[in-house]
Image (cartoon, rainbow, N blue to C red; front, side, top):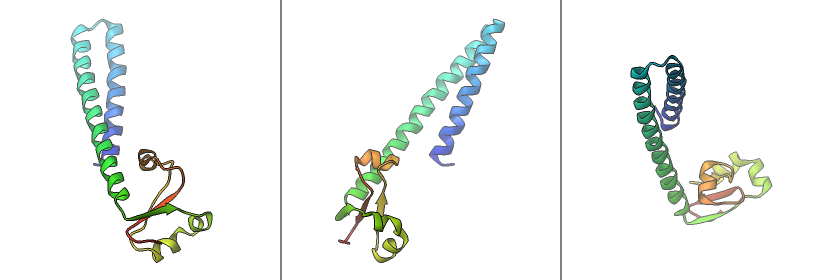
Length: 118
């Protein structure tokens, strides 16, 4: 299971536990309330761990891409025909500024990164 799926399942479990906690509090069942509070704490801890792992992977990917020798903004014509551009340039990586990677790298326009000039 990848990190995104794991994060989603953990978030769903956390939401379910919170709903069950509120129902147990309404009933006044202290034993169950304590159990769900412990479960919520464990899920929250695991969610933060998964998010930090995701962030580390994103940072590593961004640094690898920025270490490529050449980069420049892509023109609208090049963006329109990315398939042709990717076939002509070996090892081209295109980063959009609205993706998580693009925001992490701080780019402002669609940028191509490659080992050689294109």
